[in-house]
View 1 (cartoon, rainbow, N blue to C red):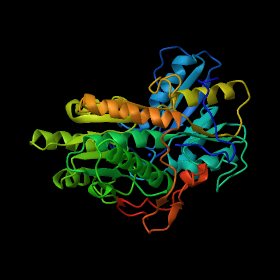
View 2: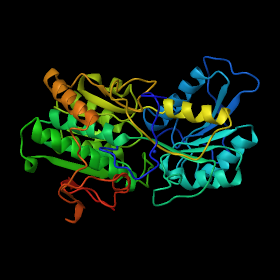
View 3: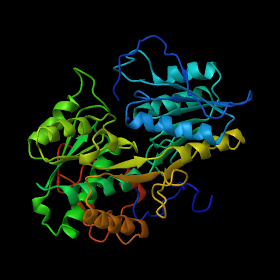
View 4: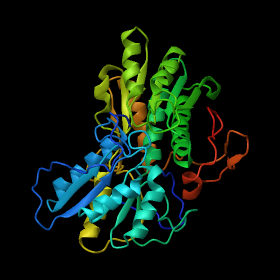
Length: 413
């Protein structure tokens, strides 16, 4: 594709900015795949795609977006059939591995497997090795990145990830534009390179817009992340995200962002607002996320898996699937275009017209490169250099984040 083609990072060329839910417990025996209804009836020789979801397919967050991404594919390609298994996680299926689910889907006819969580990285590799003729896609992960730290030479394994950092920066900017207390909370999942990267990106966006559009001192901005310990609540194992969200809202954090797969930040924001608190929230990844509490929703950074999945599945159908590390860019000409942009931002009712204009400026700057938040000097929490003065981050420096950035409250490990 030209502008509409999803780009992949295959070298060390610098990027100006580059930018894992709840449900009823499932049985622990081998899960049964479910077929997604499709608007186009698949043909007899349809390619069956097996989609393995860490959370429920209707979690109002992360897993639902992957499910909707594959529905997009089946609408575009009538000869593709979707079979999915959701809630593949230690809480809902404590004795089931993702690779076991993949084996079962393949035995039942799946010719391509998609794993949708960072937690599935070793399941994806194990599946690719065991079934070398089956293309395997891992959403997140870096085993297919030749220039990454963890490259595995596995020809039938690809990684796909939107450049979510952009979405997080936009969300962070929107949060900073709307907070009245200067206190922004981030409801975080577990801690790893990916989540440190995304929290840091949100902070960078907040800090930039706080200083440049609000004209306020960075010392007056408080940005705190509380990690619950997994992508969603596991009673007795993780912190309760409902309580964490309440603690933010009751502690003067008037804007809360979320990085977990489920909507506690929104649900508790609505309860707090109904009780008279002046609070707002930003949902995560699902384009309809503001519907949970429209009047107090600032917006939703959205991640659109459809175009990337479509491209990879077309390659598989034509026999041209190959191992790729795809870090897919936004379409800056049409950020929310469902056919071309893997990252977008849906604006909520709580975003004022004035702040909309500032957000427009910020997005334009990210898109044309005049705003590059990955340029030094930047320090980690322990005071060591992340980027020295004038230094621009490499893709590897962005992807692999050993610590959170200085200015963020909350643990890095």
